[in-house]
Length: 85
Figure 1 (cartoon, rainbow, N blue to C red):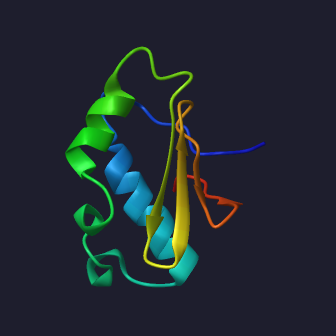
Figure 2 (cartoon, rainbow, N blue to C red):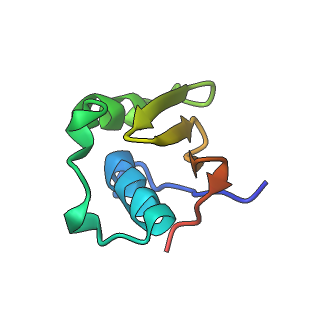
């Protein structure tokens, strides 16, 4: 399954989640509710910067949307896989 691949040293998973949510909703990223209303973005970034994230899987609600972040960096919003631009 295609997905988002992250460079863990240069990319923030929380930023990638915002980009995926913006794409899914057709909304400018700056107009979205802050991610911290749904999940701690710093904790999310730290979790996915660890070298042992291959088996990590985090699922959370963002408004009416379901967001899943997988250990390989794949981000799925409402069952739609989002590619990194």
